[in-house]
Image (cartoon, rainbow, N blue to C red; front, side, top):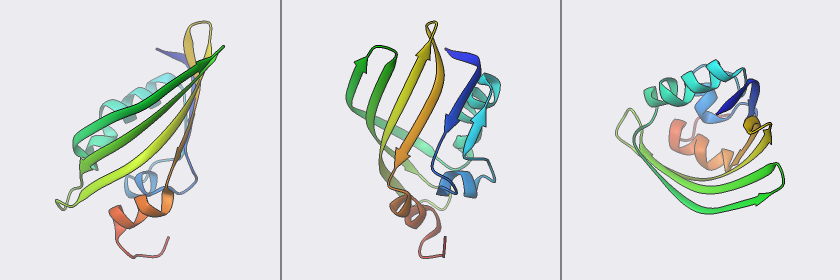
Length: 114
């Protein structure tokens, strides 16, 4: 569903990217698919995503969701996200990801400094 040259842009130094030693700006469909299908599951298991709303206008789709999961040490992860999908020729060209980065950091790393 991603264009070959798609990009996924998340907040800089977000907890997921830091914990997995990954970039916050993925480029090309294969890298994005590998992250979603495999790499993120090293940090999150028992993932439960609840979609709150989907808004579409032209070539833009906005998805609001809540993701709950279990972290490697057994603690719970629970954060709200907003994704802006930009479509081109029927494929996802760009994803812009927004979340509560402070809350995410505290759940993944505790009180460790960002």
